[in-house]
Image 1 (tube, rainbow, N blue to C red):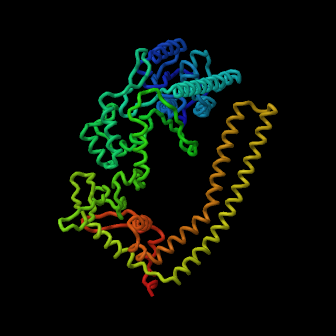
Image 2 (cartoon, one colour):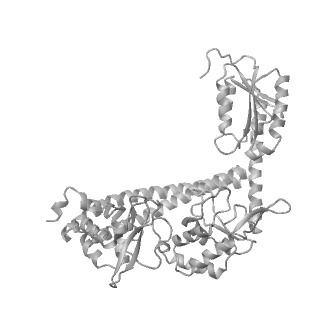
Image 3 (tube, rainbow, N blue to C red):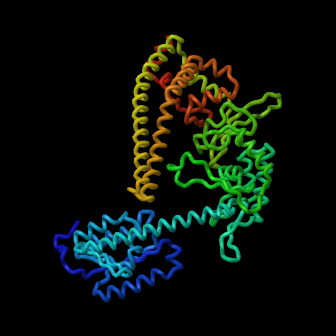
Length: 526
């Protein structure tokens, strides 16, 4: 808030000095800050400006929130008298128009002056339009410089990728180094490479899970080469390593902006570094991984359970430590085979003991399948009522799809007009490219939404039939099914399943929760 004694027409006698470099590394190793500061202190002395504070700022002016810049603005706003912001040049104060409105508002109110040493330019509330234009043009020039710099970086990156040069942290088994000219390079890590090769070879036998490879990595002491890394490889890191084609000569470049590039595939380039495993071995590992179903962790479930098929695999966790309960088969001396659920003990002090699978299945049948007893007549009535509801949804979906179609046509018309304007020379290439890119993105998003409405009705009908069939014959289906089908049924009905001791706790997924917990449930039995 402006101080009541503040006079916008007073002569400016106070100043803050603002010096900036783009990164912390430049701040530590570059003398630019000191050079800027020395020149600006001499400038303020010649202009009879008393320096209130000097800001030495290591931050980008084009990305991030510019915390120190706004700290400087807050300091200036708090002053009772007009304050000059003194910078070496326009480029050092700002490279985009993000902060322009705030600076210009303070200027037009007479609360600040902007002094740019290199341009010999002072901007104040009564500055002529020619000076304001010089300020604007300076910002535009800085913005164009940043854009050109970004384009050069991208061209350089693309050239290096095409030459097979990796430009990030090296995968495990390789080391980031500098060559004799001081340029970044990658070499084979003589310590970790044999360990990486051993993990590939062992997993290719089909006799290991990710858990056993994690134990093996721990025994070998296999860690990332990153600084301050104290832990051996986790299961997730091992999975990423086993699926990384870098080891057979292919770099995978992922898009950074996931929202804008969600439908774009990764880019692949061959690299120039030695291969750590053969293509035959790598492909064999991929085949084993692909054969394994995915569980909730996003890691292949058979990597946890091997080749065995268990009813409760990946469905139940320990309530004490949150670890996944793994299924194991044990053969007794009598020859009988029993299956147990064992906690993987994420917490070494976890008290959970193994529990027989039959005990858990008994509780599921007692608490879930026995209470669900619906007659065919009731199921038909439920289906009829739900389908009536679907009719209302279908009308709404049709209306939404029509609106989306009109929106797509409107965007296509705008795109045509934009092309004609560009061909007629009414707009330049820069404006055209920016606008057509935005229109193409909006069109693509609208088409994706329209496709969702196309599939919506069919998906609802299929889900209704599936849910109704399970609700009518849940107990019989579950008892007569093979283990893989039982697993699918339980995954459809149960969620958040945990064991504490020998007791099972779970939540019921919708709409099956209505069949168990509705107040009118008992009347369905009649």
